[in-house]
Structures are given as structure tokens and as C-alpha cells.
Amino acid sequence: MSFGASGLPPGLAVDSATGVVSGTPTNAGTFEVLISATDGHDTITSNIRMLIAPSDTSHYYWNVFSLPPGLLGVGYERQPPIAVAAVNGVSVTYSATGLPPGINYNTMSGELTGTPTEVGEYDTLFAAADSSTGEVLILRFHFVILPATGGDISSVPVNFWLTKQKLKLGVDGEEAWSGLLLFNADRRTGMRFDPSTSDLSLSLGSRTMNFPAGSLAGTTTAMKFTTPSGTIPSENVKLALSKQTIQWKTGKDSIAATLPGLYEVVLKMGSHSYRTAVHFDGMGGANALSAVRPCFVLERGKLNVGRAGADSATLSILLSDASFVYQTNDTLRVRLLEGATVLVDRDFTALGQVRQSIDKSGKLVFTVKTLLDMPTPTQNQIRTFSYNSAKGKLLLALSRLTLGGLTNGEAQLTIELTIGERIYTTGVSFFGVNPGTYSTSIP
Image 1 (cartoon, rainbow, N blue to C red):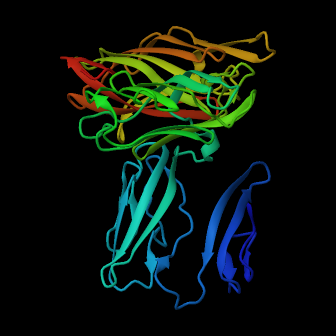
Image 2 (cartoon, rainbow, N blue to C red; image 1 turned 30 degrees about the vertical axis):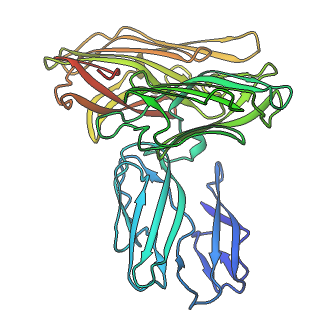
Image 3 (cartoon, rainbow, N blue to C red; image 1 turned 45 degrees about the vertical axis):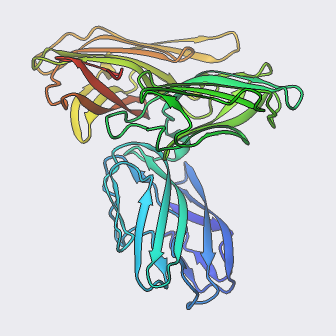
């Protein structure tokens, strides 16, 4: 590999062979730096902000400018340690909210440790308090957890599915935005998003609807908010944690957009963020199939648990990927995990079949199916595997499983699907509604 950096503070330089930045800075200030790495085939880049303090005796400040992404299932510990820490404090303690699941923050040293358990993006807020002066520093980071194979955030699936969106433009004050989406999240008791204590927001470009903690009314699994009559613009949102859906609409709105257009759609539930740019057509329509980033969610699922070798799983999955490609003999593999425990690991590459066609818009469509897998004493039987890239629907049914290690009552599972060189992951909660039966609906 070779490395590059532009925008470094005067006096600093990057070693193209090692990536080490060294030197003595000659100018104080905040600098926007673009770093890059290439292996001669692929290039990855990242924007970072670098602070040069006025002097080595400058007052209390953060001594960090970026955070490396974590990898799913890989310890975050490194040498030297990764620390979000301050300089020139006399007696400093640290705290953080919104950390990725599995990541820990040392209150005395600011060191980050632990093993990430869920891929995604997390809005993390760090605080450093100096008890001798009462000064408190606040720092926000967009903390990213990638799959174990690495890559960058553009290739990581966003775990929401834009079922539909409609943007009505025209005269300011008469515009509207509406939609329905499905999301995956940890919804176990004590872990699920609580609208009474956490904020909810939805954004389209520069237009944001904010629903502060306590503004939604209803039960813990189905809540809604509607602006009072006469409020301009009007806003309405319905959140159903049991169904994993959010529905919204605005009226008498003013939205800075033109059609057709590309705009980022962002859902924030507490510290968890879901975001992707989405193409809106000339009529203002958009959905997951017009999203720039891959969208991957479990729409619904059912697990039957009772006897080793006789358990089963039925999963209805939604997958959209604008650059999806599959060729015969590409890898087809599915894994179900609870934490680090692998419940199912099935490679059915040899059974894969593919049919290619061209739709009316000229887009290449892939239809993937598998042959019936004859059971053996050590393998599971696949009764159904089908995927159509134009519709985004993927059906998977497995039998002859052993799921006895599943946590009783509530279980947070990771679903990992490998197709070719791409790995799609999502985390979703299952609930034991009857003895031996789990589903994605909260009872």
C-alpha cells in the first residue's frame, strides 16, 4: 500500500510507505485533511479535522481528531491505545453516551476497548470534566463499525428499508414530505429505543423533523406524535417498535429541494443513526431500490426451537444494492449469530443458480435461486432460497437446525448474508411468543 494526505498543517508531512505523519507544526489552527490509501487497485479516502494548539502549554483541550472504525467481532484494543482524552487537565474524568454496542470507555484514561457486536453508525458524545476548574469539554464523533472484512461506510448496508417516499414540491408553505420505512434494531427489554427518554428525528437534506424525548404518546411499542391544529408546518409520525416501522408526513411545508434529485435521508433513534442518499424521481417518488447505499433488513422471521437437528428458521429479508452482481459459483452463505455464538453457518454456493434479464429501464436484473439441498447428518436442508434484485425480496427457509443455545424469551441475533464478495449484515430481536417459537413481533 501507499498513503497520501492533503491539507496537512504546515510543517507536517506523511510518509507514503508507512502512513506516519510527523514533523513540527508551524501554524496554529484547525485544518481539514484528506487522507488516502491505495493498494494499486482500490483507493479509500477519509476527511478528518486536525487541531494545532497555539503552544505546548495551551489550555485545556481534546487531544484527538478522529476515531478509527471498529470491526465487527474484532477487539478494539491496539498499541498504542486508542484514547479520546484531553490535555492540560489537572484531575480529569471521562464519560460517553451513544457508544457502539460492545465498546467500553475508560473513565480515567479515556481509552476505548471492547469488541463491537453490531455493524452500523453511532452518534457518540464524549465528555471530559476537570474537577479542579469545573471545565467540561464536549466532543461528538460519528463512530463507525464495519464488517470484519473491513471496507468503508459506503459499502456497509444501512439497516432500514424505505418502503415508499413521496416529495411534493411547488410553492413554499404548500409542500409536503411523506414516507414509510422498516428498520432493524435491538428491541429487547431495557435495550429498545424509548421515546420517553430518547430523541427521534427524520431528515431529508436540510429539512429535519425533531421529536424530543417525551413528545410521542402511546404505548412503549406503538407511539405517535401530531402537531397541534394550526401549526405550520404540520408534522405527524407513527412509531411501531413491534412492527419495526415508522410512518410520517408533513404538510404546509417548505423544503429546499428540486426534482429529480439526490438527497440524504437520515433516521436517528437515540444514538443510532441510519443514513443513505436516495434518488427521487421527477414525480417525487423514492424507495430503497433508489438508495445509493445497500439497504438490508429482516422484514419478519420465525424460529422453531425444540429438538437438536429438527429446528427451523424462516426469514423474509429485504435487500437492495444498486451494484448487485451475482455469477454462478459465486459464494452463497448465511450465518445466524447470537453475540459471538454461531447458531447457523451454511455455505450453499454449489446449489446456486442465476438468471439474468433486462428490465424496461435497461437495468440488469438478477434472479437467484438454489437447488434443493438433500440433508445429511452434518448439514442443514435448504427448502427455499430466492432473490430478485429488481424487487429486493429474499426468502430463506432452513430446516434440520440446532437452535437450542438461543437465549430464552428475548434474543438479539445477527444475520449475515454473503453473496459473491459482498457481506450484508443486520441485527434484529426475536421474542419467544410460545414455547419453542420465536418471532420478530414484540408480544
